[in-house]
Image (cartoon, rainbow, N blue to C red):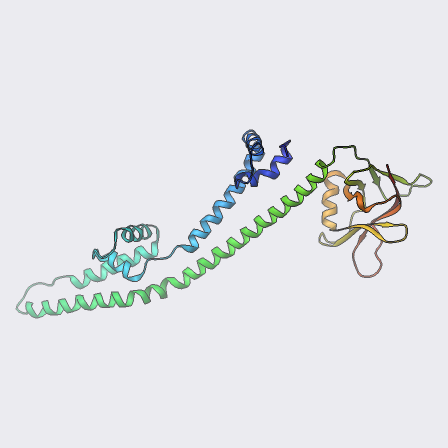
Length: 313
């Protein structure tokens, strides 16, 4: 379908960033985004969310070097392979905790290796100094992994858990955006799938006196019927459920729509009416009654109730 207008391109921004558009639609959408500040901001928002998810996944996957690697790096034993040495070195530069562990290891060895003044018992002291150095190395090599686990593991688990929670929240937000885009696309398809004229009827639900019943004309092949309503302001909380229904003369429900009081108020603030797009296939010729009813226990007074006549042409 050709790309026409800002609203259509706004719905295609996510597909454009993910490489899901084919030519010529891709080129037309990109040209519009290049010249439209609003669409560029929208594209930047999607890109930021994608980068954040990738960063979170990389952070969760990252691990601290093992105890033997920290000791080998601190003492420069030469046992680390080149790629491991580069990896540990880069991690120590970025990780304050591991950097402290390297310094602590070097300090312990330096203290043990410090030479006292030479005296008559130098040979005896030399032997004991060597034993002290070896003992320190054994303590470092055997005790460091446990020390690292006691010191960093709980904190690391907390950080990973927090990152996973944030990642889940971002994924839920992106899923909600995708659902909203899907609904908008379906609404757009309804309006662009029919090239003929569309009549609409305005139902105000007020006392009409002897005025004739509103007539809704539906042409052959028309996919939907447009009905604009202006119900009373729904009372109560925004989350209170409401039902919009169209009933035939015999009482059977030809069409219904579940919504909330908050959604009705939001739509009326934008245009003072709520536009319904009712599938034309659900309405045959004859009289109908449209009602807007709050869903609650007991009998609820309709926010709007009015008859209208459907005429097929």
